[in-house]
Length: 351
Image 1 (tube, rainbow, N blue to C red):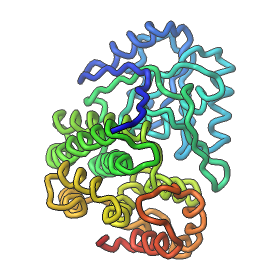
Image 2: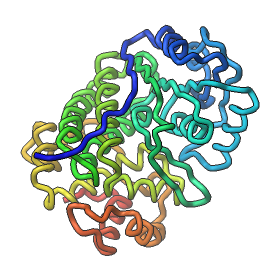
Image 3: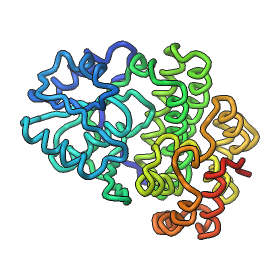
């Protein structure tokens, strides 16, 4: 066994009902005296409550999916105009992504308060969309210095959105099993993340107002992001970045739909990873376990339900081929990508 693994410098505070005091403590620890709060309009009320004890200079609510470059520039200008020395982002992946876009150029520390299971808060990966092209990169400046996890902030997240977001986190785990920089630590984190998410997802569906399932989901989402941040983007994420940036598809739902198809594509060529995923799902095979979970939680099934057209399937193939990792467990060909995308577009059962 030989590998190199880098542990990211980040503080995590996990506790239900403690967001307000935890955020205050982390901002004070970082020396923040002029805080820019970033939150989409849907999370603005929660953000004001969570940040009520902070020296806030402005609340920025101009948030958009996939972080369009113009949106990023407006947020950067707001941080500069108000002389911000720290950022607090409250919300899902788009909100965290926007805070990262500001930190990328301004070098400001971020305290992230997730209200979904996106996992972006635990990675040093940034993404910005310019026109139809989404560009991603890795930079230590964008890693939030602290994360505050509070399950009570996710209680009002609709069940359908919770399911899609949780399956997005599960996709981080699955992709981390065979991503370009994966190592045994990444795979161990991913396996535990799968177990937590597989337990949390049905619990949230059965009892949306219950904190236990929500806590399992947040725990699993954090583990999934740790694994993904170290292992890098595998085929699944490359496909979803193309679909999201090029066609404006919703992030979590796209990941939820594409996941079983990439698993079916790669699993036969990665038997050790497949066995780990199957064991984490307590199933005879990874695909059987994922199929059972998806049926239990009524997962999204077809990309055409989220805006992808039939013509887009062929159009996306060259872009996916350009983005696909060279060391994917199975060779990535035009025919293979086309079949995978068509099945995901139709909502066909992966085999």
